[in-house]
Length: 408
Image (cartoon, rainbow, N blue to C red; front, side, top):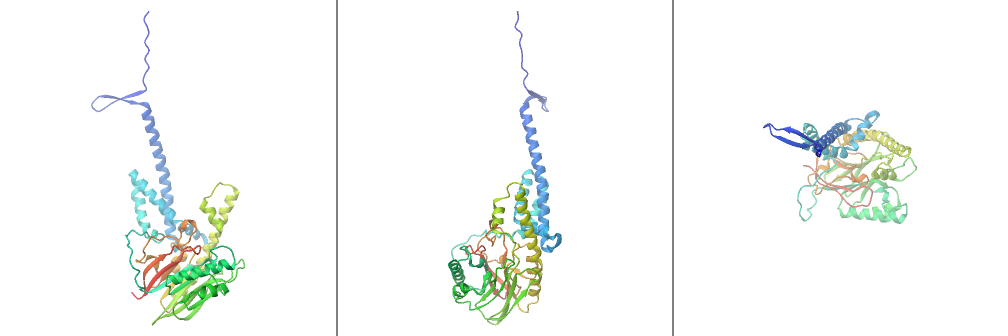
């Protein structure tokens, strides 16, 4: 009896080359190729949708400065608030399309270049090499703006804590050889302030401050201007809405007279617990998380609508000044905001001074130090030769310092 032979057919496919030769391709490799192409196709779709959304939001962010947040304008203000995040997303999208060698790379890459000037308003990298050199003599007025957090950096309302913080901030101001100091969240008419701040500022003999009362009943907070040179005029700018105040002083600097504005615009109403919640990331989709997010968004919208008329009032006061101006303050808003745009019209931002000696980014310590909300602006009659965001931590804000020369 003959044995029957069995053959197992291999899972292969046979194809011919152009020359008629045969080669074999396993079926599994073909399946793997189809899966890979499907994954790449899905990624392309996701990145295409993400690129379009990021680009549209960036366009809204760049338009926010021209649109009053009243009404539907707050949507543009929110886009401007997250501009740094959107810009990074756009860069990632551009790199993806470059790797994929798609026409979208030209569109997204071009838009990244278009956004670069606005990106520099948030982050100014220092790409040069620096060597230790002697500090040169002052070339102009050293101006500092500082939100001092009511001298409560070390926690609580205790007098001991206030005394320590006030003294340390005053000593720091002395070390920087400051000529003009503008502060926000300043304790006005407090014994602690007079003894441990005013008396320590040996060279800033002239000062003016104004207080306001907050809606929750806190009294005695305010804004102040300290000067090495005589103050020959002063006044208060009553804003249209909200309880915040702005003040101005006419200061005689040798033969010149300049007007200095100190401002504290409406805060964001975002609490410390809100900041911690956002920094940790939104977790879950329950009712508690939903209500928390709604509350934060609602307070931000209210603050945008309050800052807009305040900025309008301040812009009118600046434009009517008979003297060249220096405008300092905590605007509580970003460089792409309506408030910043209105106040800075016709002025220069010391942040862009060529004398900046290191990378600078945010001035507020919360939210990953992402936001620049404190400013020193000046009119065209001046020249800024230096700008610095100090890394000293005596408040929840960083002090900012500019050296401003009268004349060009």
